[in-house]
Image (cartoon, rainbow, N blue to C red; front, side, top):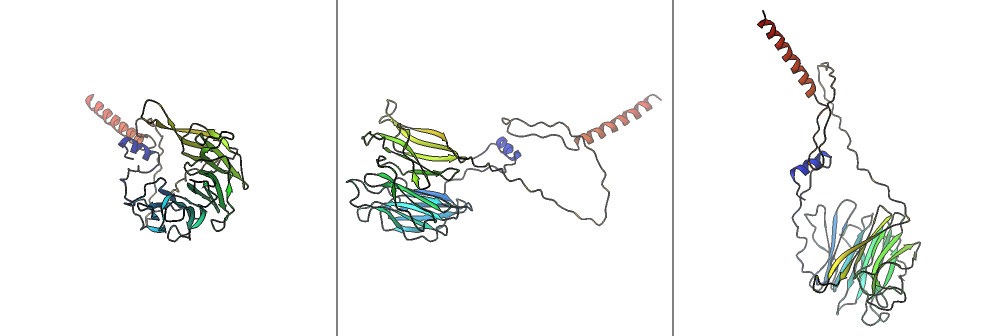
Length: 369
């Protein structure tokens, strides 16, 4: 952002360094891109490198990866998969800088399915794509594998997607960084309807939380009666569906703050006279989890720098006692902190006053002689 002078000085006075200026947009790829959603994913490695994975080509013919250390200069694209109809992609970077990627192929000329691949060298090379779920006679007519998401933490990698028979949510996970995988498990037979990819997050105790939108209130039978649902995965077992809200359209996301505060956001379509076809609003809800809060990280203290100087002639340094003056710090709306005191101003002022007094005494004596 572009800061005003006062704000800039205030930030510097608080030891936060120079204020960042807004960067102009940088062209990462000029496309063409397919006409679909979830076309790209962005992740950051442990060294601050930025990684983007995206679908490329009007028909999603390729999925590529590019990286940057500063967001300005980008690597040449590395092809992850090609020759298919890519429709969406998601990614997650673990603490070992392994980049895990999932994507959907939905094409009339290629096998429809959801796939997983990973890179262990920050995107330079990729493993052979692994088919997570493919279209076959297990699916009800009109349904196929669809929206998929991935989340990695440590050596755990979790994948959740829309699967059989009519967009029920399915889950599969790896305990060794994506080398081997568990058998896929359906989360609930009651959670159906094609919406966006399930959202996942870990809390401070390592419990996996999942949020998804779909029809699924047990006993309600209407596919279009959508709701936001929450589930947890602990010790290999999924909890029952927990209803969050019935006022939802089809998109939801999740985040966990401080290790124990679950935050869910979702969209809702309100039909009224203010806009033709209704208007979208964003809703949110929070829940305190039964998990220990993460320890707060204090900013690192600067290490004082000691500079030694050497002189062949040692000159004794006179000792000066300085009485600090009161100081004043301006309020935040002023925009700059002013600090007075702890200086030699008081000493010089006192010396000047004494000299002036001596001069006045001498002049007074001469005038009265």
